[in-house]
Amino acid sequence: MSKKYPITVSSWTLGDQCTFEERVKAAKEAGFEGIGLRAETYVDALNEGLFDADILAILEKYDMKVTEVEYIVQWAEDHRSYEQKYKEQMCFHMCELFGVNHINCGLMENYSVAHTAQKLKELCHRAGKYTIGVEPMPYSGLPDVKKAWAVVKESGCENAKLILDSWHWLRANQPVDLSVLEGIPAEKIVSVQINDVYERSYAASILRDESMHDRLAPGTGCGNTAAFCRMLKEKGIWFVCADMGGTQMYDLDLKGPIGLVIGNEGEGVSRLMKENCDFVAGIPMKGDIDSLNASVATGVLAYEIVRQRLAKAGK
Image (cartoon, rainbow, N blue to C red; front, top):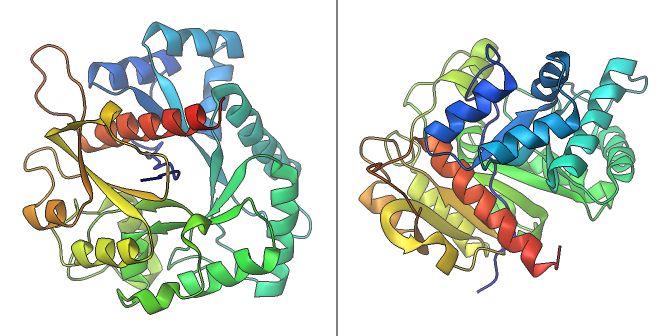
C-alpha cells in the first residue's frame, strides 16, 4: 500500500512567549520529535541573535525535526507589500533549511476564481519545487471545497494542492458526502486534518476564534468525524490513528494519500473512529511515559511520514 501525503502539526501550540530553545526543549520534554514553525517564529529566533547554524544546532541538541512551515497569506493581491514578499521568501528559505516539502496557505480576501487562480499560479511558480497547500476555511475568501478546488484546478499547477480540515468542512455546512469531492484526484489533497465540533457554532463574525481556540478531539463532538474519514477513504485516502498499543510506526508504510487521526490525551481515539481507520500506529517510547499530548503525537507521526516519503524519493 502506498502513502505519500504528510500530515501537519499546528505551529501555534507553544505560543510566542518563549525563546527558540525553550520552545524546542518544551516540545522534547513532552515527548515531541517534530515541531512546526511559522515564519514569525523563525524571525523571532533570528531576533534573539541566532543564526541558521545556531537554530539547526538547537534542533540537533534536542533531536528535533521541523515538520511544517506556514503561513503564506494575501498572495492574491495585485500589489503585495514588501512585508508580504519577505514573509513568502522566508517560508521558502525555511523549507530549504529544514527539509520541509509543503507550505500551508490561506486567503482571507475574496476574489473571483479566475483572479485567484492566476495569483495561485504565480505563487506556485515562485515556490518551485515546494507544494502550496490551499486550505478552504468558512470565514475566508475560499470558504469551501468547491471554490478552493476551482482555484487549484484552474491554476493548472502540479504543485498546487488542497488541505482538508474536518472542522472547516463542517462549519462550512458541506454535506459529508463523496459528491463534494467529485472530480478531485486523491493526489491533489496534500494534507488532512481531523477534529470535531460542538453542536452550536460561534457567530459568523467570530467563527475564526472558534477555529483557533475551541475544537474537539475526533469522535467527541457532533461532527461525525467517522463518516468524514469513511468519505475520504472512498476517495482513496487511507487513515492512520495513533494509539499506544498499535503497530510500531516504523513498521507501517506511510508514503501515500493518508489522513492521521489523533485523539485526546485522556481517552485517545474513540472506538468508532479506530474501527474506521486502516492502521493503528504506535509511537516508540522510552522510560515511564505512557501517553503523549495530541499535538506531540501528531508531530511525531508527521515526521515519520515525511521521513518515509524522502527515503522513497531517495533524498
